[in-house]
Image 1 (cartoon, rainbow, N blue to C red):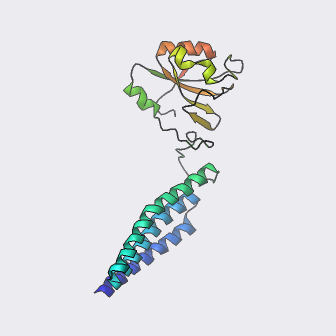
Image 2 (cartoon, rainbow, N blue to C red):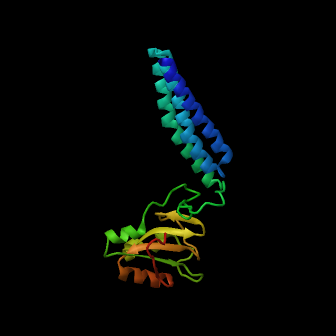
Image 3 (cartoon, helix red, strand yellow):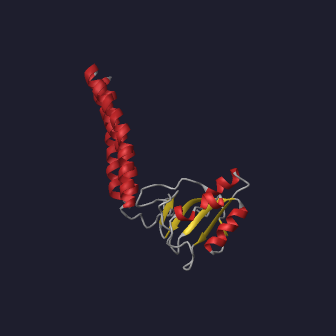
Length: 213
């Protein structure tokens, strides 16, 4: 009976490993290949080691097999995540048929920080505040100054959530960050305070619509 069970587990493991190989060959980019092989190969290794444990039916071998399965289950997702993360910020291209890149514009390639605030949801929970964005014009008096010099929070009670600078997003910037003409600022505060800041930056304020970021 043990032989039959172990044989079935070996066949299942071999099938999963075969599918992992097919995934490497057939998937169109690194991210989809990694997704397929990580899941399927983990199941294949797990099934094969279970077959070993069932066949030998010894405490020492069974404990080693189960420990190895646990190790693979814990490390494979972490390794896949790290590889995918490294691939993304080094510019490994997505498949040309990719419909949506949810990290585009929300991932800082220099600090490797992810913008995690959903601004539209934030407005719903704080109905008295407003979220606005505007771009610093070429002749703005704040261009070239740091956030510490402008003192938005102390003088105007307005918080700067993020700065868009081309494809780069600086989330929750500190006081040493310097502003430049062309930077797009995402601010949160009371409407009248935002009006004051609009005058300071000499730019037309535009409301952030739902789903903009």
